[in-house]
Image (cartoon, rainbow, N blue to C red; front, side, top):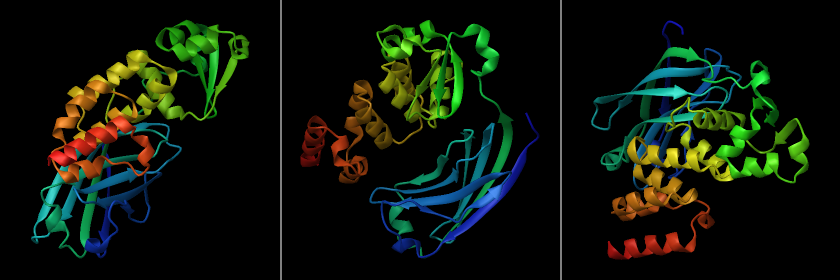
Length: 294
């Protein structure tokens, strides 16, 4: 815990109305409290988003923050939006504070977009559970992830994941090793995944994609179900973002909830990925039928 600290970051996006659509534009990097920050904006056919990014760092603490974003509006006034957000240690992290659909046309008239972000850091705090050497007496396997050692229990991992059940108790050479390296896995995502299955953490909008990615890879049904329940009941993500996650991770309940909300051509365009192969034929068929009905 610390007393509140704060800083202000400002930027003017010149010729905003001529910026490339569907591309995130970033301000120059500014450093505050040992961390690099940028203001970002994106304009597409459906909405305008303005946010704040914390770049990757060696920060050993998560941060609870309150972000007060002030935007000079097209009508000459200003709009102030406040959002609470938890930035995760080490990882690059983005929070979209301002998200407007109805005012998109007004923003197309703006030449220079002036944005100020006041960031109040309320708390620094460490991981909810430590899986370091302090857990060695309760562990019987060490997983090496992205250069970091996690001291864990084989049976607990196997109970929550068919992947780990096969890896640790199957006919693989790894089952005999005391230290096993897991490649191409982000250590922060793995920490969040472990905290979830250990019952110490709730899913949030910042961690859900990374946890789902690992839950899918590890075939971890409990983690997958809890992520889908969060997206259905508590997430503040746009329904278009939820739909993309539903398709990506085959979350059928979530997909069925999101589909009826795709009611405009702009909605449909906004969910189409850059890599068209991310959607299978069945998804394209559904989107095509919806587009024909509009």
